Length: 78
Image 1 (cartoon, rainbow, N blue to C red):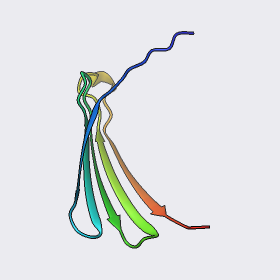
Image 2: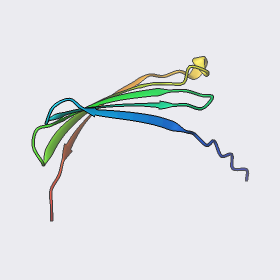
Image 3: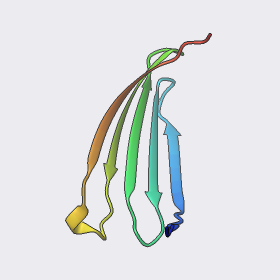
């Protein structure tokens, strides 16, 4: 069995736009770049909505897939 390690270095920047909205940008700064943009809207301490867009690597154009995802997070303390 052969394991190949592909270490990456990411740069992440975040900015709170308002009390409820946070924007985060992240990029891979190594030789195979990709970018992620996420927007989080906190309705309350228990409920938040997150929209995320990921631009895939520009080096592997044949396998390039851009992804958009949407999450609903509900927090409950026990």
